[in-house]
Structures are given as structure tokens and as C-alpha cells.
Length: 300
Image 1 (tube, rainbow, N blue to C red):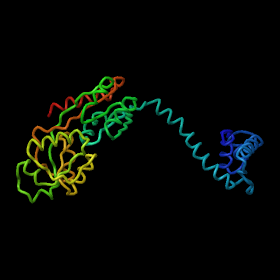
Image 2: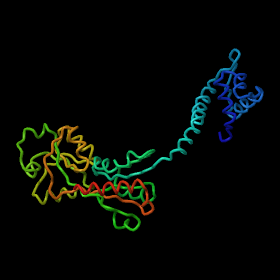
Image 3: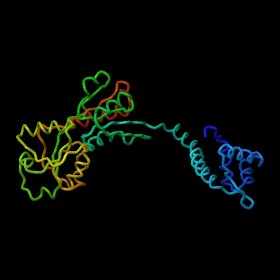
Image 4: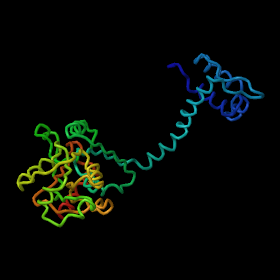
């Protein structure tokens, strides 16, 4: 198949679409004999007859139908290339590849990225995963920015730059139907009695929550652990339990999911760190995200 001549394939495609050699010759402004010879050469290369006589024109054989289907895809894509090239040249895409560590509040991440979402021709790619693989992708310059709940390991600190974007207070939320029958009580008492949903153990927030529980002598009844904060919120909204939620971005979730705020964990914060390679320090969209986050963090 390496000897396939795409010019021959194109002539065959035109003949098949026009239904005959004469109409194809008229469309291509070429001699019928030339087009016939090109199609015969394609049939010899493939080893099968592609066209057969049908009245005053031609029809596709079964082999020809298979060839035509592939040719249709190829040349339709080819016809779209000039327009795609022109669009790309006129408005180069503003590319931003972001890695998001497991357990980080997706609402907070969306709020952090919000300042650049209106950028013209933005091409945003988000990767969600564990910190170490994301660091590897960042080191290979496949990511422009990693958002994580903790700074990079010391072994990575020489080739990466990390800034703590914010230390965001954490509130506890639960579904209204789970809480409405309960009298108002201090947050510590409620968390000791209610079913609790938590981030998984490798989340930086989970470690801080456990320390906060210990400091307040709370032994929680943990009924679920989640890597994805959005999934944790969904299960909470369905009545499974109460869960922690960073204040930044929380106003977008609670009303629509009929969640009620139990209270704020005094002294408990979700940290969000922005990690970049030194080569990517001057990415304009990353700089815009960091500047907006610095301004937002003043509210906390």
C-alpha cells in the first residue's frame, strides 16, 4: 500500500462522484483518456477492479465502494484544510495546559481559571491526576501549570517554581433533608454525630482535616472517601453525608444543589499551590491567573 498514488485516487474519486469518465473529464478539464489511464493505474496498484460499466456511465464495484468511502473521507478533509489554515493564521490559539491534583476542589479550580476563560481563541486542556505524574508532565513541558494542594517535593524544587495562591477557609455542607430535622448545634458536635464524606488519603486537605479533627477531639463517622471533590459533593447532595468545601467557588454549588452550610472549621484551610517550570514562567495566561488569585486571596 506504500505505492498508493493519491493523485490516481483523486481521479477515481471524482469519476465515482460524477458517475462517469466524461463528466469527470469536464469537471477536471482533462482528456478522458488521461483520467481513464490514471484510474486503471490505481486498480493495478490495488489489485482490484473499482469501476464497472453502468448504462452511459460507471458504477462502483464492491471493492470500489470500499475505496470510495476512504477517498471520500480523505478528500473532504483535504478540502477543509485551506479554511482551517486561514483561521489558524488569522487567530492563533491561546493554548493553556493545566494539571489539577486529585482531591483539589474543582469549584476552586474553576474559579481560579475563570479570569482567562474569556480569552479569545483560548484552547484549554485540563488533566486531572496524582501529583507525581503531573510533575513529570510539567518537567517535560507538556503542562504550563499544575494546581496542587501542596508544593512540589524537595527533589523537584530546583527545576520548578511554586507559589501558594491562597489558603482558603473550609466550610462544611450537607443536604437540607439530612439536616432539617436536627437542632442547630456547634459545628464540632454536628461533625461528631453526622455521617462524613472526606477526600482520599493522598489529598493534602485530608491530612489537615485529620489534624483538625484530632485537635477538636472528633472521631468522625466516615462513610465515603473521594478523589474527586465534585463527585463527593454529588453524593453528599443525594443524602449520603456532610462534606468539606473550600469557600472559594462554593457559592456556585450550594444553592443549586440545595446544600446547607453547617459552619466553618476555624483554623482549617485548603491550600492551593501554582507550580510551573522555569521555562514557562512567562506564559501570559498563567501570569494572569496568578495575578487574579493574589487579588482574590485578599478576601480571605
